[in-house]
Amino acid sequence: MDRDLKKALAALGLIALAVIAVVAFGDREIGSEPEQNLEQESEIPAADEGGADRVATVVAEGLDTPWEIVFLPDGDMLVTERPGVLRRIGKSPVEINVDGVLERGEGGLLGLALHPNFSENNLLYLYFTTSKNGRTINRVARYEFRENSLSNSQTLIDDLPGSSNHNGGRIVFGPDNYLYITTGDAGNSQSAQNINSLAGKILRLKDDGSIPPDNPFGNPVYSYGHRNPQGLAWDNSGNLWATEHGRSGAASGYDEINFIERGANYGWPNIEGSDTRDNMTAPVIHSGPSTTWAPAGLAFLDGRIYFAGLRGATLYSADVDGAGKLGPLAEYFKNEYGRLRAVTVGPDGLLYISTSNRDGRGQVKTGDDKIIKITRPRAEGSGQ
Image (cartoon, rainbow, N blue to C red; front, side, top):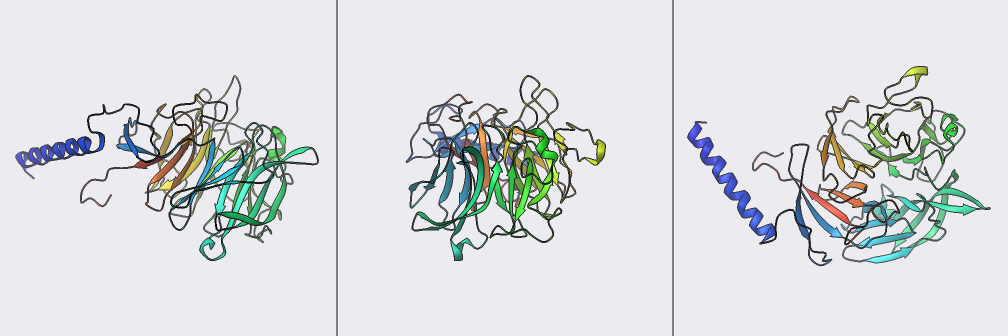
């Protein structure tokens, strides 16, 4: 292509972008705070330190510490809110109070998953903190979700160690149709190294709560040596990835992205960072000794993993090569929305994230907490 033609095409591209900006933003200054209006989506551009433009659209607001986002077959969203509310957002909105939820510190109503055959059986799974015989525990229960209500509750796994901190809480069905569950060490770091304890683990169960025959230790434990894993996602090669919170306090750091393998020991509290002694598995990447991501939700889309940062207040992303390696880390919306918790891919193929500024650790912004849709402009005719 000659130089004059390239210049002409570039000029046309700039004109097209200008038209898009006028249509999307009118006379509002690009980058200004969007109007808070539940009936009108507000689009704002966000700084992208990773190279690709992102546009954010607030699709719901006024939530209280949303923890998980899952889409129903009809496109409506189900969102867990930590105080104990399961909220449906969309064409058939409803607010359901989940019995037994104890919001304590980081605990409360956390993970949510739909059965792989939800369209036929309407089975829904919840992970929540509760009290049992005076003890704080976590529980995974299965329900039928019909006509905007929960019924026929069945406990799948009980007595998961609970505390005001480090409750894990993510539940996701894998490609094998088994339910994967993250648990934190509940403040007892040595329990993460005990394969007979359910704390500090990634667990795997059948959809009825029974133990898969190929679990490595003959119990629910799939991997161990975790401190507080809060995100799970599979790449296109069927590999499992997890986010994990590193140490906290004055020496906060060493947050992790782990490549999860059956029966592997990820080292907490014995190793941190890139240490691989004692046949323990080091993370694929970590934040280092002085940077804190506080990574939460995790999703895979178009060859990249995306994860939310709570203390990092950023959406992070990296290329996945399919063999357990990641490319350089990119950052989006840094400090734009505050603490970020959930990340999921919608039926439209777009990312949805949630803020977590009302969790007692964030600075509450107008309209918090929010669910935000992320669109990625595609090069015309490229198919990318």
